[in-house]
Image (cartoon, rainbow, N blue to C red; front, side, top):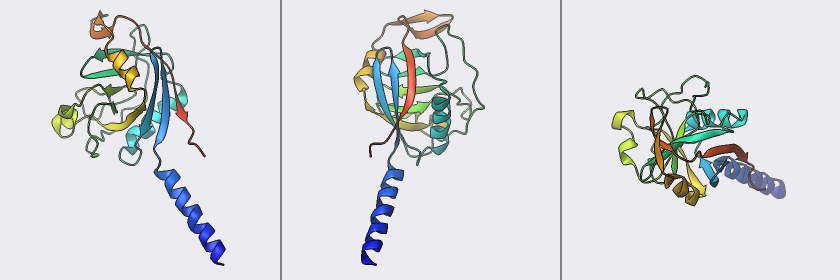
Length: 186
């Protein structure tokens, strides 16, 4: 009986630890790989939205279309032709989740409307507390870089210019080849 009880406690402990572990994704770019841990506990809507696009293969072949060194790198919504891809409905802004736009965090990009985020995201190249709630409704952080910050730095260092009337576009196209879930190690 004691052995069964100990086994049950161990099983519950391992299950809780697995559930608490952040979902990880691997973003393969033309500059190298970036691994991200997503915080579904603090940003469940943003993480579910992002993973929906990941699971659909939506991000494959998109580009980083806006790069500002010392600020952020943005992608996830346009092809090489600078045309926006069709998206799902916008999601509710979760910027009031306690997470801050610090260097290496990933957040939902949006328009001036706080509840307008769809597929686009940005990775903070530096600490950007001005993007936190309540400033302008805030930008919802939903994860962080766990490996590959040097790739983010390389993307941020890419020279930019104007293309199709848009500023801060990398002069060298930087592709998001794919974003895939990383299976937890057993």
